Structures are given as C-alpha cells and as structure tokens.
Image 1 (cartoon, helix red, strand yellow):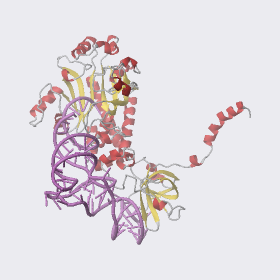
Image 2 (tube, rainbow, N blue to C red):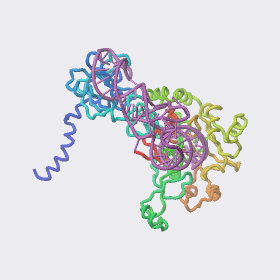
Image 3 (cartoon, rainbow, N blue to C red):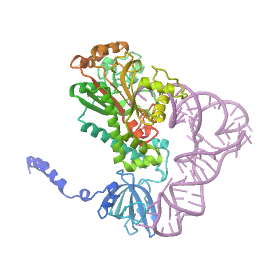
Image 4 (tube, rainbow, N blue to C red):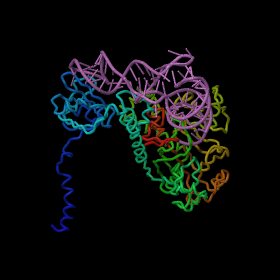
Length: 489
RNA sequence: UCCCCUGUAGCGCAGUUGGUAGAGCAGCGGACUGUUAAUCCGCGUGUCCCAGGUUCGAGCCCUGGCGGGGGAGCCA
C-alpha cells in the first residue's frame, strides 16, 4: 500500500467502522426516565448510572435503586443471587457506586413504582467507600451541600434544580426564537470604562505582584487591550446596537458584578437574559416581559412536573399554586407615584418611611407583591434621579420610562426601560450625571443616524429559577456559586 | 460594607453555676430475607473553628481572627 491509498482508506474506513457493531453501540441504552414508564415494559437493554441505595431482600436477592440524572425518580433493579458477582460485588453496592446494568424492564411486583428492571448482568465501574463518601443516605442541609458542590448534583434536590434550570434556559431560547428574535453574543470583556451600573471586575494581564513591588503607577497602555478592561455587567448597550439595526434581539450570557453583596439574592457571576427591541415603547416592553415570564413558568410546570412536586413538597408548599395563578392572571401595573401613595396610605409601619423620590426598599416591595397585590407587580415611571442616563425621560420632567417587575419573596426579577432615543435629551442626561460624551460616541451615533424608539430589559436567570423552584438561597440554583470571598470549585 | 445569630463525632445536634464530652442518624459487625430512607441486636467515632487572655482548671467567660446563616444596602 502506498501512502496515497493509506490516506484514502483512512478517509473512507472510519465512516464504515462507525456503522459496525461494537460492544458499545449494540447496547440499547435506556434512560432511567424512560425505564420508569409503563411503555418500557418488555424492552431489554442497559441502564447506566449511580446507585442511590441497596436493600437486601427476602428470597436472597437485592433491590438496587439507580439514578442517571434523567429524572428525579430512581429505577428499581432486581439483582438475583444467581448473578455471577452477587456475593462478591452486588451485595457490597452502596450509595455513590457507578454501575452498568443489563436486563429487561418489567412491571414491578412492589407497590410504589410501575416498572423495575430484572438484571441479567451488573458491572461495577467505581466504588464509593461509605466511610469516606460524604453523601449519606439521609437529608443534608443546603449549607453543607454547598461545601460539596462537586457532589451535590447527585442529590434529589440538585438534580431537580438542574433539570428546572435547563428547562428555563430552553424556554428562554424557544420563546425568543419563536417570536423572531435574533440571539446576539455580546462581549464578556468590555474595554470601555463606562458601563455605568455596578462595580466591575478588572481584567488584566499585567503582573500584579511585580507591580506591587515596583511602587510605580499602573501603565494601562501596556496592558493587553492597551486600556483598562473589565468583565461585563450588562450586554444592554451592545444589544442596543443590534436592536437598532436588526429589530428584535436578545442576549443570554454570564454577567459579572463586583459588588460586595452578601444576600440570598445576589451572585458575583450570574446569567442574564436581555431582550432589546426597536420600535417598542414601554408598554410593549411590559407586555413582552409578562408574556415571557408566563412562558417560563408554564413550561416549568408542564415539563418538570416531578421536580416541581419535590420543591412544592420540601421547599415551598405554595410554589406550584403560585405559578399556576400567575400564569392565569394579568400582572398588576403601577406607576411609581401611585405605588408611593398606596404605601403611604397602607398604615404599615415601615422601617424606612416612604416619600416620593426615594428608592423603594425591600420592605416596600414585599408589601406590594406579598400583601397588597399577592402576585407580580410591574412598577414604572420612576423618578429620573434614581435611574441611569439611558432611560427615556417623560414629559413631566420628573420621571423616566423605567420598569421593574417585582415578584413575591425574590423581589426584582426584571429591570428594564424604554431607552432615550433623542440625541439632545440623552446628551443632557449624560452631562447631568457627569458622563463624558466621547466615551459613548458609538452609543450616541445610534441616535445620530436613524434613531428609533426602543426598549429592553434584563432577567436574572437565577432569580427566575429561584422563584420557580421556591429555593430560598440563590446559591442553590447555580452549579458553582461565586460570591464575595468564595470561588471554590 | 453594616446589624444580628452561629461554629462540638462523617451528618444534624445536646452539653447544667467553669471540673478535659454524649445520645440520634450514617458507618461497621451480626440477624432477618418482595424491599421502598427496610427492620431488629451489638460496636465506636473527637485539633470542641483558629490565636491569644482570665483561671488551680475553659467546649463554656473575655479579646481578636476565620468560616457559615439571616437581615439591610447595591442590583438581576
């Protein structure tokens, strides 16, 4: 064989080889999720996953519960004593062991599950020494589980959180794609030093240790980008560029805030969805936000029934009813000014007194969402002094076209606005807030050339998942939470 | 960053007026043998977060630090 034919065969044969039966590809892999459903009865194949518990039973055989992440429920496997490795291995299986099980799905003889697998062969891939394996066959606190973030996906709760989070992510894309939005990948690194809201993480390749020893001033012109660079706190300004060119867009990506926030609602790194739409006014924006949230809630209820039942049972007895109600009711919409009047007339004793022009405190938001309206509230037309420069000014000279969607317990889940599209007004607002127009030249260009009314908002993914699941702490709805002083794993 | 709470066995906790720690669950050993976090009997777990201080003596009291939680602010 000459080299040319070798190359030819190397090119052709792999396609063929993939079609050849091999030990791996002949196996009919059945997910635990499917194996638990009645239609699977009679099918033969393999289930692969991790042992949750083993019970040795009458008649000299064992029940093994296996989970593979495809569903909350485990598959019960019957391991008979006549299996070759029954005494040597199967009777030693404990929580955490990884296995491949060959067998046939049949109707379960026991009470609690419709199906079970009769094993004809069990291969143990990895053991989990019960003296050393941290996860016990009992409930652990969420705090302790955070210390074991590499193992907590193996628990019922985190499996459920993970599946719901996935469902929400899928719904986000489905919703916007079905509505004709373009998915825009806005940059993670921002070299403009002027994103406005929120403390930012600095990105640098400068040798900080050397710099500290040298005692000399930082020369940012020598840094990677030739100027200071940061991690993004929002894709909005970039999103506006594409909305003002292509109409309807959304971003969905990681967002970074270097605030020293230590609460159950804040993360230093989180995921945010930001739609931005040309020719949308604030009411269109509110309509979009409401439709969007309802879609996320509806999909979670319809597609994650088993997982939602777990949250409803163990974490928040009201979460399913709350979501169902929200999906069926119109969101309450309320101008800031009216909200202030309601709060003042409420007779509640607030720690912070309410006055027109102040930022609403958590206690005020909670009163509105939890007591007064018992559901989501969209507040809009906030005092201009409270809000950033890019929000559209109302003719009253006092308010801007901002909107916040507030929900019970979690608080602000969406923040957005109609953007100021008038060049002169925008420039005046920037001057008011001591921002340099030259730093925003490209942003101002959008108003110079073919400006359009446009609007958008940001939804915190984790806050949405938090609200849907009823999980109290945001650190328990993200795989690896980043918070001040904590970046483990 | 501020206020409050908290840190004892693998895990969740108790520990009296200051006298060097103990029950449960998990684990291990055994019994039982269509079970559902199986059940029953037996066995032990230790840098009492760290560093100082007070005291004859500190898990306990004091000071400082670190970790965790709740609330506030900032926000999504």
